[in-house]
Length: 488
Ligand code: G6P
Image (cartoon, rainbow, N blue to C red; front, side, top):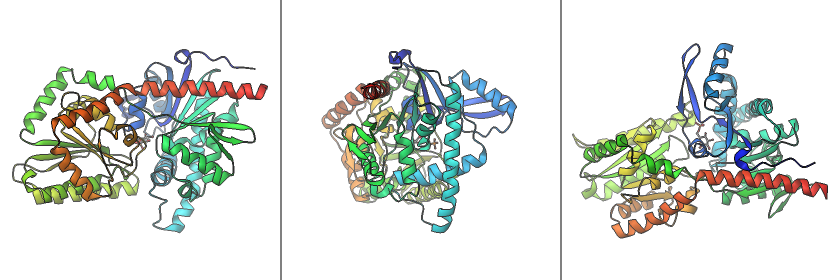
């Protein structure tokens, strides 16, 4: 029996991600304020509008009491969000532990934690158990809200166990899973103790979406580790095909372009220009994350100042570093390391009236961020490894007037789409990054214009809405094709 497929925009979409697009802060027993969550996943999904979508995820807060849970559920419902309540212990083991201390570094080619191998092995088991338990909690909430014909779209490395749980509840559910991070080469993935179980759980989905180079790694992990057959379509297991395909993500570029016409933003741009008059503005915007290459970027800037004395009072680096995963020890170490380097460089090259680096440990609101992007001369995105990196897209969207230069890591997914317009660098090579800063600051306006045109066109035409439409229609098609194969 075939399920009815409604056009995508009338079909209900259940978007399931660890983090909801809004995070809650408790103001009283039953009163809450909501803030937009940080990160590329949220930034892309906020641009997805033309769907009848519900969001299922964690609101980033511990709510142990029933009164609180009820009132938060009500507050979130106004935003079409449905909470999954995770207690402190689960957050510790599943989110801080398995997701962010194990999977995240591994998927970004930084390997498994090695400090104390025995302790890691022991905690690994309990963290994996918590990971599975948390995924089951997400599955329960999805199941409770699911209606026949809905499309269920699971996101990211937090929820690799979810497709299997959902299919066990209801084999007819249309389930897609999308990975926003890189997927490592099979030689790295095979070091993970739970390597096979995770792959098998993901393969329960009908469609797996991964950024282009990494789709190949995922399929080869399934063939080499699980012994399954890889086909041009995906992975086949005893006649059942899981389709694996690449879907490049984008942003809601119009939202950024329109923001630059808002009077407050124009006023803020004017203030920034006055504040930094006579100096070129270089900008970094990152979550304060171990994969973003922030220390390497700042060291490259130091090298540039060291070698180019004439630029010392003519350039400033603004580094917005949004705190993230602050309970994970690696992130705490990174924060102190970055502070230490920034302090040293400002001490070395600062004057009584000006510092070469302005480092902020916080996020900016959307309008302040747009103003900053628009007045920037050179943006530095130097991730050691990154799924796509949408900061590079946001910067380009705000540069129609200025046509600034993007220095971009060759290890960010965006290098494939914006590489022709950006200066591509190996972020580990500090000498090369320092040289690219000089190249960017001295670039002619014709060259900047040409590079910007290429990137701006890409960012305008590859939006998050288009990404989501392609994924959802491909998911519908995949399910229909599978049903046809079975009925043959
Ligand atoms: C990356 C991940 C997202 C995550 C975001 C923010 O973009 O791919 O899944 O939401 O980082 O990280 P956080 O741990 O704060 O949710």
